[in-house]
Amino acid sequence: MRRGGSNSRPSGYEPDELPLLYFAMWAAKIKIVCFATKLFLIIYLCSDFFLTFMKSGFVSIFGRPNAGKSTLLNALLQEKLAIVSPKVQTTRHRIKGILTTGDYQVIFSDTPGIIEPQYKLQEKMMQAVKSALEDTDVALLLLDINESWEEANNIFESLNLKVPAIVLINKIDTVKKEKLEEAVKFFKDKKYCTELLPISAILGGNKEELIRLILKYLPQGEPFFPEDELTDLPTRFFVAELIREKIFYLYQEEIPYHTTVIVTEFKEKATLTKIVADIIVQRETQKGILLGQGGRMIKQLGTEARKDIEQFLGRKVFLELFVKVRPKWRDNELMLREYGYQ
Image (tube, rainbow, N blue to C red; front, side, top):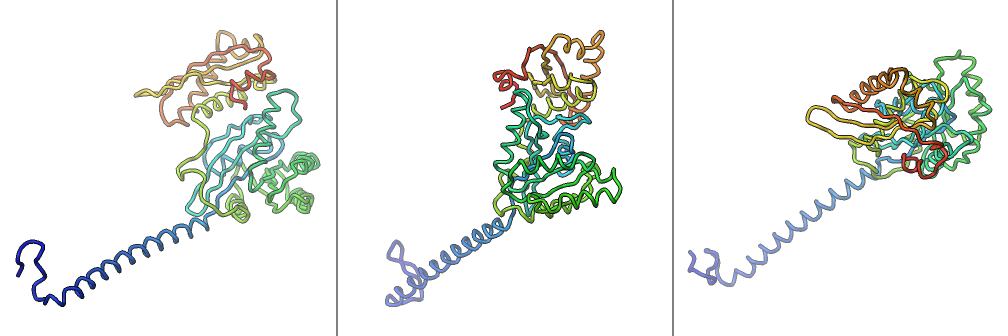
């Protein structure tokens, strides 16, 4: 029975028993706090333990032009991030694609084909290769089995790699077994060759084995990007690339190599996305070729590019294209920076 106010005490206890009671109550509270603290530490340490065993790192794809680097990147990600065409030097930028699972995160980089630069744009392209070399944890050295093996070897040696390298012999679906065996024999004992794997990038052959080999050399660590992120590049970049890809397919000779595409407007509306883009050329004659007689070619370019952009964005698109002449833009440092070539 309580007697009101702060002088009340638990019923059934004598005054000399109260200190022991309060001590027991405080001891119980301390035990609960200690248990909660231990539980928190266990959860924290376990999460850190599992993160330690996750693998995460950068994997760059190097090779000559048209070896199949962009096709390989798209196959590994099962998404079309990099544009492709039968013509050489389609890729001008370093394009990162992120593959994340519960066990690993691989940041792949598609790089421009390695060449001797002839003008500033190509110098920028080779700087993109250098940038990828500086932070890569594992290098994928890709070659077309039908190209010169000596030239591919010279390029691979010139990279002076300090990281594990997996030599990938591509397009094996186009040759007989004997030629493949010769290629394997040629590359397997090279100093830069840590591992060797024949693949068919376009058919997706040996993809699982390639991932296994990459993880063998990838360092442990926490992810660099959120698990739902596919790339670090903006949507505008890929829209411009899809337009440029159609230029490679629809126009011949020098036109694709003298053009670049800049998205000047990108507005998402209720029912569609409005996109305005400039196609930059070097000469008036090139502008005439791009437009075509009566604007026929530019209309075809717009129609085909719009379909690909709609598929990429997953919604309807209104696409408007303009052709602008900027003399010698490929050798102009300020213009190159303006057009995204850093």
